[in-house]
Length: 267
Ligand code: KIV
Image (cartoon, rainbow, N blue to C red; front, top):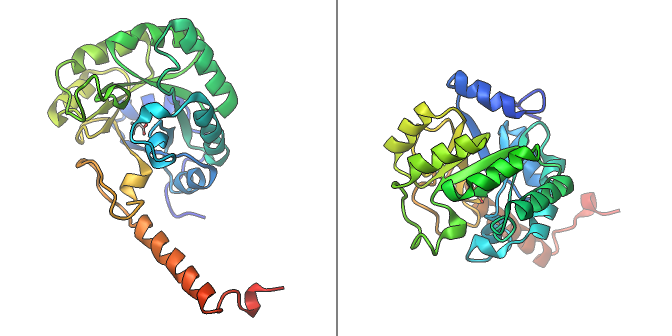
């Protein structure tokens, strides 16, 4: 299938560096299962993130801190099987990397081994620089995540735009060897300025148009479920929730009325 501009070979980390040099934007979406990964990859999305936002949109928790390594490993492996040529990043869940560099490397290698993903993402700037360095020393690819970091929502006093430490945190993760960095909920002008100076690709979510790439939770951009509360930075690009509700109701009606299955769908 397609008509969309789909990468013709496996996307590698070097492709993102080259896109930055050419000032060419690219798109990342979250994915949590095989079928959705296939759909997003067939639409030409260059990078899939197995986000710990799975805690919210897959498992129904109210915080990302409730998801663990096993869940991320199962979801990540399914996404990788459906990802086609898209690059796949998997989130390190809360509680799997904070204690020490050794804990971080053991869990990171376990996640990569079980999922087959190409890169790990972890939250934190200056305070996580030693972990990023340890992962790089272990031969792993790392995406940092600064600005608003959902795993620290309570320490940050809620869902608030972050400005103060963005420069310092970005400099620390770049210095530690991160391959790319997510900026979440930060002022657009600041994200654009730092992106222009930054040697690694920046990916924005609620960070304006000046970053090298953008990421959204796919359920948000596709309005699944219909009517759910979404962050103000989200644009809805399709009404998947409404369409799924319509399809399920049509199926129910056909079953109730004895119209399904008809002869064409019976043996
Ligand atoms: O878990 C997640 O989905 C994320 C982003 C949306 C950046 O970390």
